[in-house]
Length: 77
Image (cartoon, rainbow, N blue to C red):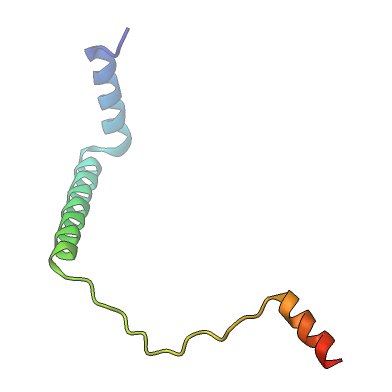
């Protein structure tokens, strides 16, 4: 009970009637350009080595736990 040739032909005719032959070929051309661009981007990423990020920035300040702060307040007060 799968799709037979008559059902497939009907679907193709409906798609052509809705979008028109020119619009479908434009969409397929855009899809092909997107795939080519994607493949080109992937191959360029493989060729370029990753650059190391510099760690010149100061490390973040030390964050003390609330229990340590409470102990320091008790000692000071």
